[in-house]
Length: 418
Ligand code: MEV
Image (cartoon, rainbow, N blue to C red; front, side, top):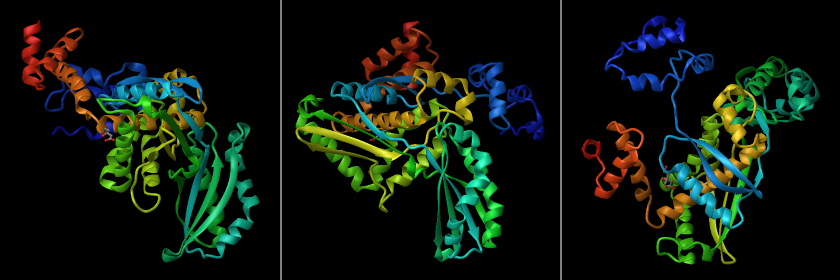
C-alpha cells in the first residue's frame, strides 16, 4: 500500500492530488476525475474537512408524487442504492392518490449537556435556583438566535447515583439552524460557572444527539380496495403488510432491516440537504429501543376498511448553519424543496421515511424486491464493462432478456451491440 507523504496535511489540495497518481494500483482517469469536481468545489472540500484531496460523488435524484399536508412536494435524495428513489416515488404516488400524508411535530428545541464529577445530588436544586444567572451567562451566545425567535427554553438536572454523576441539561430552541456549534459553545461556556457552583469538575460538555424533542411524524391511510397488488386482493395485501410490520416489532433481527429501509429515505434527504446523517441515525435507533427492545419505528394497522401507516421519530434537520449554508449542492436542494423551514423539512423526512417503509413492505410481502433491483444491477454491469450513453440501456435490456447478470455476459453484450 502506498503511504502518503507525512507533510500531506500541510500541502495544498492540488499538491495532494498530484501525489494521488503515485498510489498502487494506479488510479484510472475515471477514478481521478470522479474525485475532482473542479477548482471551486475542491477549495470548498478543503475548507470543509482536513487532509481533503477531492469529493465523493453520490447520485442525486428526486422522489416525486408526494402530497404532504395538502401540498405537492419534490424530495431530493442523495443515495448510492438502486431502487430507493423509485420505491419512494411509487409509494408517494399511491399514498397521494388516497389523500397523501398528514404530518406533525418537528420542534426545533435541542439540548446541551454538561456532566460533572464530584458534585452532589443536592446540587440539582441549587442549579435550578440559579436559572436566571445561567440564562444571563449564555445570553450573548444566543442573541442571534433570539432575534429569529429562538433562544433559551429550560433547564433540568439528573443525578446518576450509581456513578455519582450530575447531568445538567440546557434546552435551547435553535429555530432553523443545525445548532451544533451554538449548543457546544453554550455547554462549554457554562462549565466554569457550574464547576464553581458545585465544587465539581466537568467530564463532558456537548450537545445531545438524542433529539427527543425533535420528534416528527407522518401518517396516511389507503382504502383496502385500492391496495390490490401482484394477484393479492386489497384486504389480503393489507394483512400481509401488517404481518410484516408485526414481525419487525417482534424480532429485533428483522427490525434493524425494517428501520434501515425507513432511513433509506430520511438519510438520503438529510445528505442531500447537507445535514448530519450520523446524529440523525443514532437518534432514530435510540428511539427504536425506547421500551428496552429494538423495535419497528413505524406502525401499520387495519381499521374502518383502510390500511393505516404511521411513523414518528426524532429527526434533527437544519435549513441554515453548518454545511447546509455554504454547500452549493445543499442550497440547490433546498431550492428544489421550496426553501422549507427546518421543522417542515423534518416533517417531509418523516413522510419520506414512511413511504420508503410502505414500499419495502408491500414489495417484500408480495413478489419480493429482487426483480426491481436486477434492472438497475444490469445497468451497473453495463457501466462497469465500459458501456456509455445509449449503450447502457441496450446492454441492460440484453441482460434482462437473457436473465443473466454478470460482467462476462455484459462484456459480450457490449461487443455484440457495438
Ligand atoms: C433495502 O435497502 C431496504 C429493505 O431491506 C428494507 C426492508 O427490508 O424493509 C428493502
